[in-house]
Length: 180
Image 1 (tube, one colour):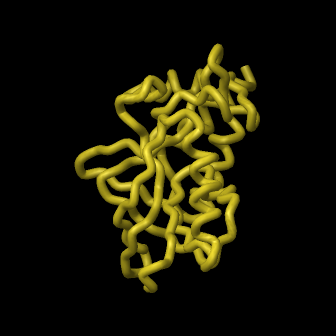
Image 2 (tube, rainbow, N blue to C red):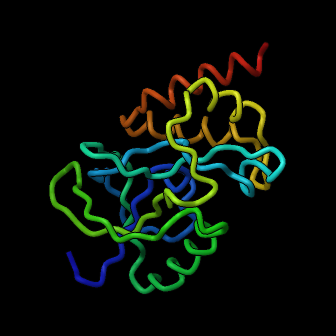
């Protein structure tokens, strides 16, 4: 692997909508973090009056998150980082980090990713799944309904054989809430 390669680790919407030129994708694991609906969304999937929830990487001992590592097309590293900062750092609830990842097929790299700031006002750790489902079923933001984000992420994870039990439960529960 070349020293100047830029890898980006995606665990939520980046999986199905990276928004930048990708030279290569690989399934990868990030240790010490887990995927969680622990961030209130007041822009993209909710509003300040009715926040939605979006996924973030939340630190946890012994945890890991399986996702997609994207190798950025060579020569486009700087514009990709600028794009990601504009997209992901909209409210400063995410922190930009370079993290060690391991590829499922073997090998490792350092990847750029965005993790939750546990001291930010939008951080909501430990919320019960039922409470998450109620919020996701009703919130809508600038990029659309919160449940669309949930469904897209869960379905793309399943296609990659990275199904997430909590997300699958949320998909079924949100469907039931919306059909009631």
